[in-house]
Image (cartoon, rainbow, N blue to C red; front, side):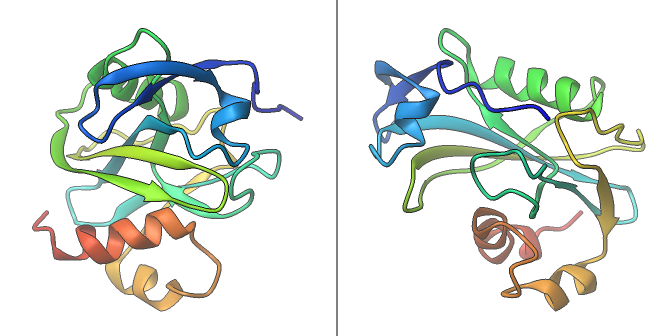
Length: 170
């Protein structure tokens, strides 16, 4: 079983995304509500199906739930674009994709506060989930709608789906 690295350094940012300090992952996820940047990449097949990852049971946030295809922290000293490409490569083996920026927003839970940079990409490449994930699958829009508000998805994914993804033209 793998475990999240509580000592990993993350940037702390303001609402505009400007770095104002740094903190450990453990501090950011421990209820401090320190705003830290993350990236999300929504991966669509050309036919419009959306690829989602299943979060491993060892994760400290939302274990076992289905979530955005690629999601991860921006590391200390890393740009948002560098983090997006690194996470796509590490989590799904994706390297040849063109990200399209969707939106930046603040997401708060009881444990943390994230500045989310959300992107989408349409690709014919088949995602290859790494050991960081508990697999993944493509879902149709109807399959996603049927599972909303059931605990199947992470709250953050559901919020993004309702706000932007269900309205996108693929």
